[in-house]
Structure formats: structure tokens, C-alpha cells
Length: 316
Image 1 (cartoon, rainbow, N blue to C red):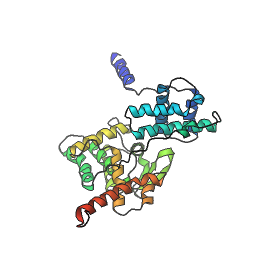
Image 2 (image 1 turned 60 degrees about the horizontal axis):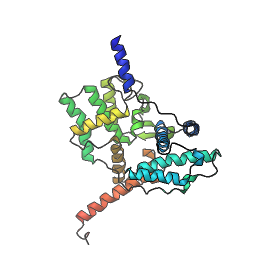
Image 3 (image 1 turned 90 degrees about the vertical axis):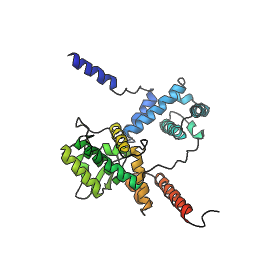
Image 4 (image 1 turned 120 degrees about the horizontal axis):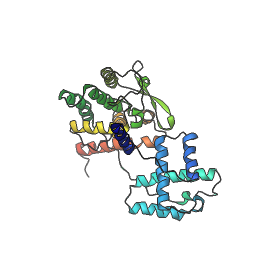
């Protein structure tokens, strides 16, 4: 009995904290996002965090009584705290959506957030792996297994995870949400559920399909979640971060390369080899082409670097 009580105590301690409820209007907005806008759980969590952050900065006063200067003061406070501009813009995106909701419901007569100018976004080109680095990363789990550093089915799983990431460019949340039935080895495709529960079908390369079949056979995965942990439950996003960090170390690659960098690598390598931007947009599941265009900047910068290094009359 004491052991059971101790296990329950540890489980309660390690369980994620429940979000603190906001006021009625904010909670109605979040329910509106979930029920009518079909927003993802991650989006709802992000918007809840943004609303709570403002309330922590300005705990008193109704939403209808606030002015543009209140939000300018909040922005200045975040900038003084050296918060990344992208994070500031993300918080204001949530606030603007909230105030648009209040305006739609005629709770307010004017959206004061439209009067607030946001800081320009930093122009940061996405990091990506070279094809040689991807090859080393894919080979890392098998090499570790030969050295008896990991159980065989976990090595096969990690290889399949990395291969599928690079083969499809899907998001981390999309990958861990896959079920066995979503992968069709006959048509060589995978059905992906993306943001806003929008489905798309992505082609999958032969090496990724072979890695998935090898992993499923080794781990005896027949139905349910495609990627599982030691307890045979669905693999979490945190677990994928951990396994990738381990495999990066084994491959001798920088440990700060996140799963999203495989998505960047997928898009960059496609464009480098002649894929058109619209096709890459569809494969990535981007709602807007402007989001995909960042990868063209990466490719152009690489071409410019190659030109400057190789052309005899490149230098002024």
C-alpha cells in the first residue's frame, strides 16, 4: 500500500499543472477558438498563456476599459526584459485575435489593438542539416545498437522517426500523432493531420518506408499509434526531442538541432534540387505561400556564397 501511495504521489507531482482559469470573456474566446475555429490544442495553450501574461502585467481593469497605451506599456515591458521580438509578436497576435472576437460580439466598439505598432520581426534564416549530416544522423541509431547502447527495437524506431521526418517534412506534432493506418506502403504516402485539423497526403520515400516496416516488425507494432515508447504508449513530443538529442551526439552533430531543423532541411533540399515553391508549400502544409518563401532566401544565400567563392570576378 505504501508503494502504491508513493507512486501516486510521484505521479501527481510530475503531472503537468492545470492552467489557471481566466475571466469569463477570455474563457469564452478560448472556447470559441476550439469549437468554431477548430484551433489546435497548442494554439489554445499559446493564446491562454498570452492572455494570462497580460493579466499578470495589468491585473486590474476590464478588457473594455483598456486603451492602446496600456498595451504599448506591456510591449515596452517585454522589450526591456529582452524578450525575443517573435515572442512579443506572438503574444500580440493572441491579443489582437481576442479583441477582434470582442468586437465581433459587440462587447467593444473599437479594437484598440489596431492602434499599436508591433516591432519588426527579426530576419533569421532557418538552420538546416546538409545531406551528409542527415546521412550521419540516420546511421547513428544502427551504429549505437551495434555497440549495444540501446535495445534493437528502439534503434529501429529512432531510425524510422528520423527517416520519416526528413522524407516528409512534417511537423513534430503531426509525426507523434500518426497511427499505423495513416501510412500506406502501397501508394507510398502518409496521411497527416496538420494545424486546424486539416488533412493532407504526403509522399514518402523508399528508405523511410523500409525503416518503418523494419521498426514495426522489430517492435511488433500492428495497430494504434505508429511510434511508441517503452511502455508501448504513443511517443510524446518531449521524447522525440530527447531521442534526437541522443542521436545527434552519437553522430557528432550540434546538440541544439531541434526536430524542426529536419523540416527545414527537407524544404531547403527540395528547393535546392529544383522543386517549385507551390509544391513545397503543399508538402509542408503551409496555409500561406509567404511562410514557405523563407526557404527561397536560404537557397539564394547559399547560391550567392558559392558564386562569391568560385567566380573569378565576383569580388569588387
